[in-house]
Image 1 (cartoon, helix red, strand yellow):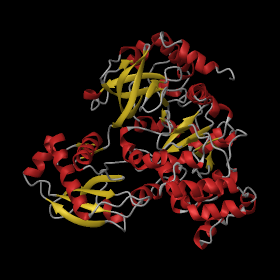
Image 2: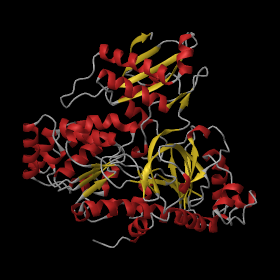
Image 3: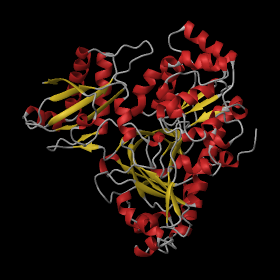
Image 4: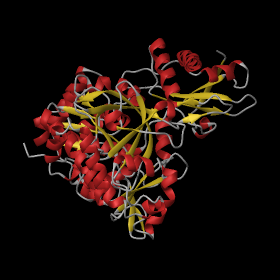
Length: 557
């Protein structure tokens, strides 16, 4: 296997966490002390972790936004390093975040990617030399540059620089796929092209993407079989062909070829089971990689018939801002703190409402505790409050094993009830366990009216042999959800009991409606893969923006 110095350093130094973290910070400070931001804090002589924590305040993105905005005209605003681009990502406000990308941040992220894939290649040698596909639905393009600095999604940034996994020669999909703007058409094209390839690993950030892909394999199986048999798209669907009829279509079509063996495999998979299993279609497939956190578990339940016994490894816990945890084994959520890439601090879960809460260093955290992750990167984000709640589930030698739980700040409060994402996740899990059914996706949000109240919209799985839940079952689930929510949050229970909040309303929506609404509302330049699941929002009357939303009843529990 090819030498991997990043992986070697990562595994060889887990017994020396504190010194490694101090060294990472020292390298970042060399650029920090020459910045306008450091000068404004009178922190240009900071040299140690203790001095840094004492002189530099913890900061949200909104605290740093004015300094990010200055970069166009003041290159040293946040760092002495050159800003190459801005990653555009969804913000907690209506205004997207622009994350500065510097050579130092690139090196930090590349190192984490090398560690992650190095571990996979070590555990699955066939993947190291085989065919793999990742993030195959991204069609985002760079926006016009600001003062010579491009604005783009992270995935498109790496793709254009040849550092993404799809730059390698064993990548089976052509770059022209990015020209197909319609998501359903792109998924069909991906399925058609992948069917004629041997495949050893599939990687998606979001399991919802993988579920969509699997459903295309199932619902369009006859067209895929026809296309593989005669070397065409295999479909007469005019709308689908219209979306595929983009500039470069002829180049895209040139990749289509006849593969009777693949057509036979798909046909046999369908005859054995209504739901085609990935391993039956690609017998060389060794691994599936995607996020496994608690918030996306409903998708895993729907994916189970397709994935069956295939190993599934969590993807790197990351954001456009930073790398957080690197998974080291299959079937678990989270991984080893990315301690060789960034400098990390932790705020106790009980202290997150304090804008200047004290922090603990990575070598000071305790097993079983929950924290908000605070990160310092080479991209100019200093003591940056990520808003992510993580738990410390153990240690890899001295390095914490962390798991993402939920987002701080994902709250809603009409009259002081202060619902959080954690309350909603807990209540939904309780309802699904009790009722033995689980929605594919759900969203809780405040609603207006004579008696302001909360509503929940539910998207039930349908197709692939799965019947949607009945209206009665939907209402039973919502009633159990409301009861569990009151048990999880006494303020919510009190406000409902006193009449300050009205009864919860239940809506069901068409399959895929919640997902499509999120994708439709994403900021320009943010890739589809970056659109994360949400279970709670403070946005009012969300059902009014989804045409298929059907009010079932108002429950009084």
